[in-house]
Length: 256
Image 1 (cartoon, helix red, strand yellow):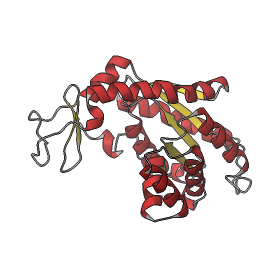
Image 2 (cartoon, one colour):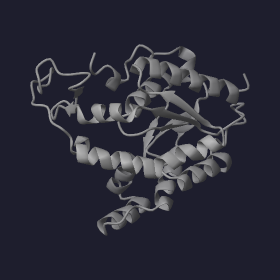
Image 3 (cartoon, helix red, strand yellow):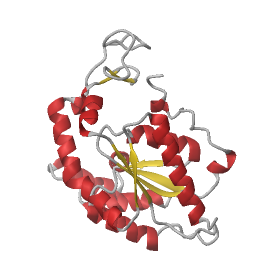
Image 4 (cartoon, one colour):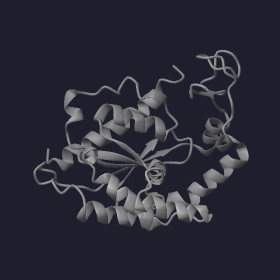
């Protein structure tokens, strides 16, 4: 039970046969660290068969494959600088043009700034879904969903998180503890606290979210394109509401 959500195998993951062939469109999931975006993204992937595209994964992949963009990014990182929006946006643009993203995709970690959100809007409007007429699709604007969780609950989720260094399973000492304290149920390994889950790091992560990512939500809200979901509920309830919004948006895009 503790790890059902992490595998994308919740009760709503299967969907219907038509869900894996219909137009879904771009999905942007927003929310602070610990809001459960990773759990929900995996369930969306499982039901609608669209890719989850992580900017972190894109960066590592480009560097590993020694692509021109990857080599530029590597040089920047070796200097201790942040990779520019332009480089990240070029990587995202290349990835979104691949065939598996033509029905839709979930963006993970992007857009992080209002500037990136503006770029994404322009790219989707002018440079993406070239076959949308053949698909009888009316819109390419992203579905923007923000998962909100109470600040104190976020801290409990993050500071209570424990992971198994062997199998990768995630537990929480407050809500989803292991059967034996601090020991993995599967392989008996001693559970560890990730550096990202230490209280001082968590405070910085939440502050960074408020400073950088919250304005992205405000940007979409001003355009009446932001759908806010209460993430304090059980994951299945959050999933059901997200799926309803995705299907509503899909039907509108297809003119149904």
